[in-house]
Length: 406
Image (cartoon, rainbow, N blue to C red; front, top):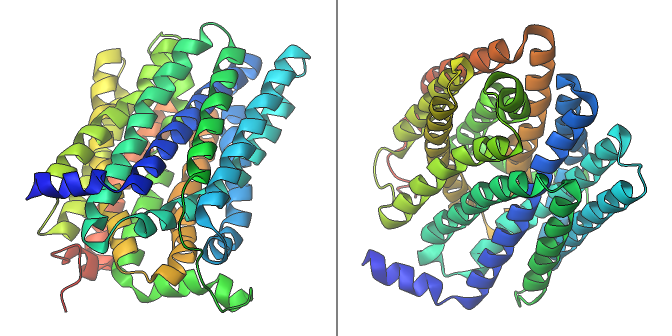
């Protein structure tokens, strides 16, 4: 039955095209992230400036994501995704011009970070709300899991390829990213999906309706806030250039491998979940997975061995994949299509934008106390949060199945 379901899923050609578009787009985005981080650290050698790269992406994401969710519920979601790909391609082109004109400095990298934050703010709600339009409801859980595997594949390939190409100079990374982003945009434009029909005008009430929905559904609230704190406290991504160069004594290729390692674990786990979906005790499994993520982060923070660091990051990625798949499935299954953009926008603020805020927090903590203290304390905090959520969100801890039982 599982193999039949997968065959039926791959027979959905619009979904396959969008899957390829996400694969190309996220790969390019991850390449840009590696190149920007290494480029900034080459220029400034500052943990604070590494954190600012995350902050300058977070602020526009925070400001624009809720309006972007409303846009995703009123306009063609595939076209919104394509425009976001184009904006990121233009950003890569500007970086190329900056290198050619010798003005690719700290200020330009921060400006590009703002542009990428704006693009991501509009991309994520449209991207998340589009998948349910491309597959029948019976295939949605597997489609979302397979979409997560595409993202994890891109997160593996993107940083590794970005680190490898950076050896030939940042221009090579930026040019390759621009080509992939244009390809992703073209694939998205080929999709024919119904335009969302929303009778509500753009009022504060309609824009904030996603927050109201999440607040009223405590299982979704618990899952999203759990990931919010896990990312804020347990994310070591922003400090990987410091670990690669100063602690583990490796270069751009090593940085690419470190950035890819969590995605290796996440991809393996997501593929396992495609074949054997979680059926029972999903809430307890989610909380335990976040605890494992925190413990793996502590091991990474204390490690001086490149191999042990890679293993710890692989485990953290596998644990995080469980949370990503379960959260996205819960949100999409329990949200009406007319509100999926706005609810996905809230999810993006809680999860997506918190990645950038977490990078800033890690960079600031590392600047004050050093990278090891920053990472280890964050991992311990994540474990404590996972334990606290058993008490604060009993509806989540006691949830047995992904689909609510009525």
